[in-house]
Length: 260
Image 1 (cartoon, one colour):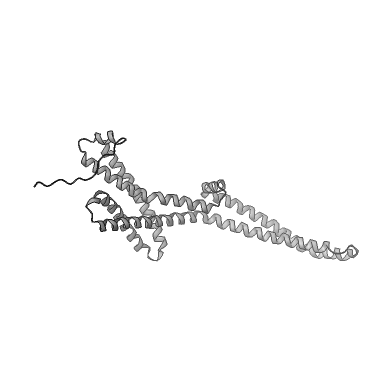
Image 2: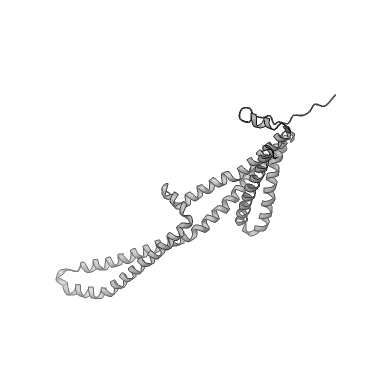
């Protein structure tokens, strides 16, 4: 029967591999898009750095006391920098995915805005023509009828154009409504907090980025700790569980004294 420590070690390995692999994949695709001129080279480099980062993180935790201070500082700094690079790649990937899904909606919204502006110009022209005719003095009624007759075809054409614009806006609004279903939750959250969809998407991506890679590093540390505890208390693993909530288990490496 498997011991609980072995089960936890297995679960940590699986969760660590999942998060690390997914994060690395997102990061590699994101960095490749940022440096599209050398996408393959960047992908290979990023993949190698991602793998090395996880190995170095486990190595640092397990052999911290045995590493030269200068090397310790360099490796720690390298891990932090690589976490930043990975987070940047993930941010780029998720941002590009959001822009792809919201592009159609923004395009249709721009078309609706342009049609509304055109319709405003049409209605303004109709209003100006009618105002000009209305300003003709009453004692020049024949002139007024003449202007109305001359302006009638133009006004009719403008009204038809306005009706056509309204129909086009209606169709586009229906298209926007269908497109919004792809980013529907973001639209709802944006309306709840009285902000725009882009801002909500930006903060949501920041939340993903702040959790993804740091969590992978912490799982590596937890995995290394679980292995160290299992090695130290092999055959007496119940002590780890019994003291876990009241006393920190001593997992420090103790050098054995050499016999004189």
